[in-house]
Image (cartoon, rainbow, N blue to C red; front, side):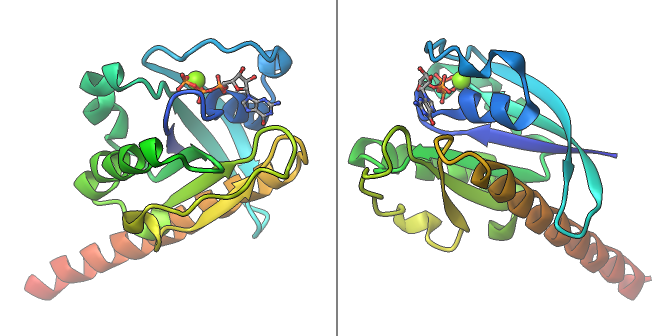
Length: 182
Ligand SMILES: Nc1nc2c(ncn2[C@@H]2O[C@H](COP(=O)(O)OP(=O)(O)OP(=O)(O)O)[C@@H](O)[C@H]2O)c(=O)[nH]1
Ligand SMILES: [Mg+2]
């Protein structure tokens, strides 16, 4: 079974760069900015901490709000949501992140533990880390940096592992509820 993971966040926050890196795509180092129009889907496999390999379908969404008409279709059936933000979280991005969380997680029944905020530290690591928006304080968040490489893979695997654990707990709860009314 393939696990659908949706990655979204403000434009230019580094989603495509991170997604290419995770999928080992060859064009990950060009450095040029090409805004993602709509969504790109990358497929790869991920080794979870319990050594289980999981097939991933990573939906790298363009952060431009003009893509909004596609959001419900993109969100449908996702097991995990990764919000990517610039590590300093400018005020202008805070509300946008909260809105994305509502649209992609809350409205589709994803629990906090099925979501993650990646605070992407671009360039030198002296950049100040901003305050996580109020609505997202209970969502696990991690500082990620392409500059120091390997923590991106580890953060991604942790997010997927947590999402899948929660998903199977929710399924079990649902089954038990059905059995209890029969
Ligand atoms: N040096 C460096 N540059 C980065 C890093 N992450 C992103 N960039 C650069 O920042 C720019 C934007 O990155 P993208 O990954 O295309 O941003 P995006 O979030 O996919 O943007 P949209 O598709 O418009 O939503 C590109 O020029 C990248 O090369 C990083 O970790 N280090
Ligand atoms: Mg992009």
